[in-house]
Length: 344
Image 1 (spheres, helix red, strand yellow):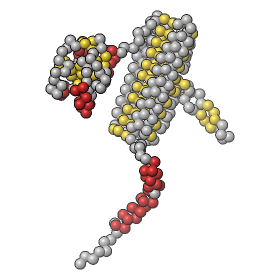
Image 2: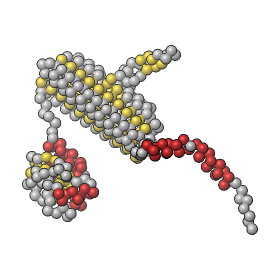
Image 3: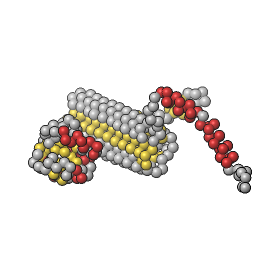
Image 4: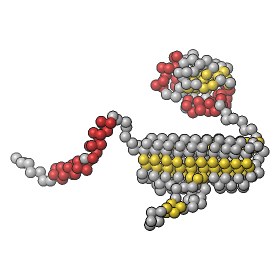
């Protein structure tokens, strides 16, 4: 539980109302109760405030007069402030140092490290202070994991990978599996190309459940500082993702693609291999990126939902676009000819 003044002392902002009011959790406007702290990030929900029972609200300074009489924390970005408060109310579980008797460990570890049951850590592994290796995780030989990083249950990190500090890898994540590299014989048979690179994750990277990041074929696959990957994402070999980029669930990035810093990639977007995306690009959900993007901006390549009948009709029109384009060119050529009209 925190008093409003304590929150402002830690996180900044300004209080309008009683700074001694205590709050125990953050909650949405429509379900908040006494003792809760709610936030209003969009003015279109202002009408809900009248029925909101929260003890205090996080709002922008321009709402001070409109919400006079309520206990407020005033800040330029209520949603960001809410995220910071939520972190205070919901800290990660404390590290419980020690190696479980059912773990198999072949490397010397700092005393502050926590290793869960069924975990296996091979030789020549280096872990930083306060690392947590969850139940049934595997850490391959030669891997380096930085201070404060947490691996939840059933994470697999292959050999020689590098993971930075304060990272979070959720259950089922696989780091460093072989990239999809094969050469083809004349007979049609496939010859495997050994994947000799590594995966290198920066600091403060979070990777969602069942996401995979493949090792490089020759060079490394590199994920920059502060990158956030959702669940069920595929990052192929030799991909490079710039710092503070975020990707939503089921996105896929093909081999050797280069994604810039601070990009936002929507759910189920697909990025083809061997192309580059500039910094500060937003790719909408379901979009296929088949060529490089050289300028910041929002890019969309999908169709909105429609009835099946409308889709059939529209697709029928698409099938005739070539013929329509030829007809337009013919009309343009005719209109550009001599004017035979009478000048009288």
